[in-house]
Length: 413
Image (cartoon, rainbow, N blue to C red; front, side):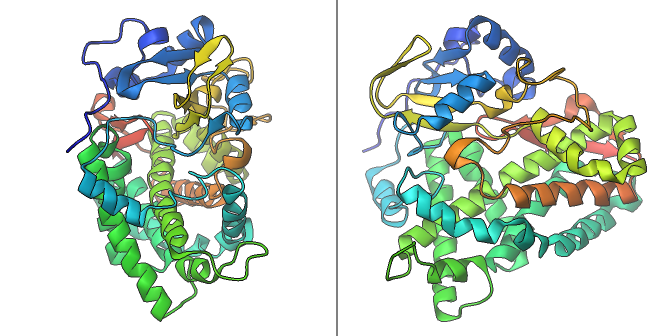
């Protein structure tokens, strides 16, 4: 028996304030005008599409909602509800996914100690261990296409970097990176609107990770999986349970790949159209740090979800228990009440309190890693390919919904 999918609409959106569609092709390609309209007309919009949800679009609202963890829970961070898989598949998933994907899908107190376990491994100092390896990876990728005079900056470059860096951190063989990249896309991109695809991808990821966990139990190494298997919550006498390790590894694999390659891809897309910015980064290499922050602000990739724990009213919106709230961090980062000239990319923007990595207790624990990968990817590209442009701007394709970023982005140089 299969649960019926959530109600969805096929007709075009007529009123974005009451019937938005985060998977609308035009919105995925260019959501910025919609966000501007919603901030003016209805800062917290609503829709019945994809299971129904609310979507705040102002910086202030995103911060307030993120801070209210009692009413807005992180128990299900996926942005769409498209029904449930078969009972058999659901049972298999629950057996392996019994604790969710901590800490991102957890509320305190589990969130508190599970996040604390990860932070030391994603500190600036720890992340720096992988910088030279990442540079060598970027150089080797560029070697493959530089003589051709063209490449897909998304497929051939951006999408190849995070999967291999995460593989290195988890102690997974590099040659497996391509496999789990496709599984991640199946879960987080294609599967968002197709429950069977999402469930199948989740099972593949869990099966793969379970193999890795069992291998590390038998042969511990200097990697993140081995670390988690030996880690203890503060004050606990025993290591954290194996299902928790599996759930956290699932999170690292899923959250550490698509999000970062989308950010790198968006940066490449921007630079391909703005040669002056490329020149500045080459002539003023110290600009790379604020430039990464600005590119993260302007092209923030991630929208997370919260669920309402009890009937409540927010800003005049009557929210019901289990209603979904789409945490539109990208829209907040273009709020003109918070950022001067928000639609301009200003590489040396001095005041930039963006929330591309979220805000509050669920702020991304891997932000230092993502920043390092973006910095290195841009630097190494510009060293070898200082001038490049989009081959055909209209041919660029985007993914959206949970994570927005270019999926095809052909450039010539």
